[in-house]
Image (cartoon, rainbow, N blue to C red):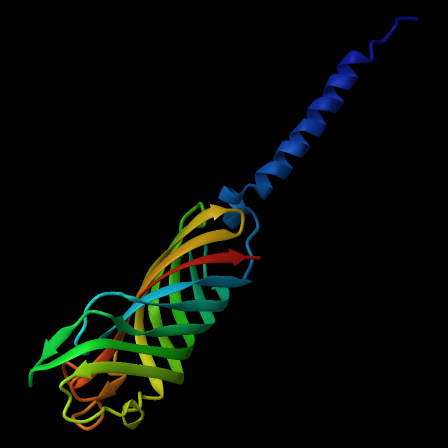
Amino acid sequence: MAKVSARPALLLLICVLFTGFATTLHAQNPSTYYEEVPRTFYGGLILGGNATQVDGDNYAGYKKFGLNAGGIMYVRLDEHLAASIEILYSQKGARSDGEQEVPGKIIIQKYKVTLDYAEIPIQINYFDKRRSHFGAGFSIGRFISAKESGSALFLPEPVDFDKYPFNKMDYNFIIGGNLHLWQGLFLNARFQYSLVPIRKGNDNVPPYFSGRNEQFNNMWTLRLMYLF
């Protein structure tokens, strides 16, 4: 009887196991995740910060920093498109510690306003093969609270900021991008700007601390996002 070697069978078994293992790794590779494991819905958590200013006051520069945190849900529309909706807590406002002279020989020494919003951004996003994506849309912000203060020299009378409330709603245009870093982790950069004034009218803006009669939120955001 001829002797049959077991080596070819063993090599065949090793090849089959290696091929199956490689296929599994390929399916789990983050760069092919979007094509290999398609889902209609997926969500995540967001944490980062805002650099903001209020256009319409007497100061320029993104000097006010605040928290930007919440959750996000994506709805896949096709291979490269997805709609997203977020629920956020977002701090906006303005700040300046530099002296500035305004009409009437009044010198503003300090000014600060912190605006807290509950915000719902909605966007359409385009994904590339590595899951990095960019999008544009709008947000609806519900005003929660404000802390506004300022000091100045030669004021004819003190300014009571409580007499000049902000609008209850803030509607913004949004554009931004998300860089895929690792697995479900993304780095997000975003710009947004108020579409309608957050405070307006001769009788609705604080005198001396406002440069014009309409004010708008102007904001850059940098965040980390993790999608599950």
